[in-house]
Amino acid sequence: MCADTYINIDMKRIFLLLLVVSQVQASQLIQQFKSSAFNGNGYSNYELSLESMAYNRNATNIATAEANAQAAAAAASNTPAAQFMSNLQARIFSQVAANVTNQLFSSTGNTQGSFTLPGGALVNWYTTGGNATLSIYDPGTNTSTQIQIPISSLLSTGTGGG
Image 1 (spheres, one colour):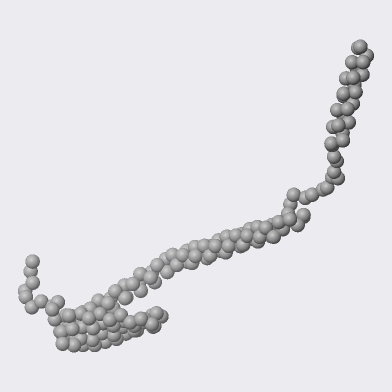
Image 2 (cartoon, one colour):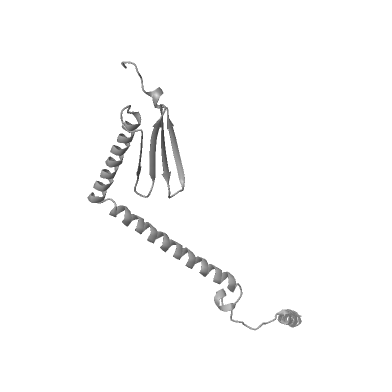
């Protein structure tokens, strides 16, 4: 009985082994690349990402170059000679504006005048009947600004005081 039991158990094992072996299937090994640059799947996405990286790198280089150029221009305009010229020009324009103001409010001065600023801007002024008109034409923007000043009402005839 013992021998029959062992044979019976061995037969069961052989049967199970045959059953398992018959269900196992093998396939051929195929080498595949993970990179889409080599296998062709998703190659357009690969190209788009390369193009995007190149564009971003180029945009960064351009922005850096522009920032460097602006820094160089700022450094060049910050020299003592450039500061002196800027201050001198501001003082001259201030004096011209003061002279025009004095002429507008003077009862004995000129009643009209004009001059041209650097860049082509034209300044005209004239007084008529207690009013002063100041007009500034900017050819760069093709705009004109006109200011009407009622000087007769601004000039007081009183003794002043406070």
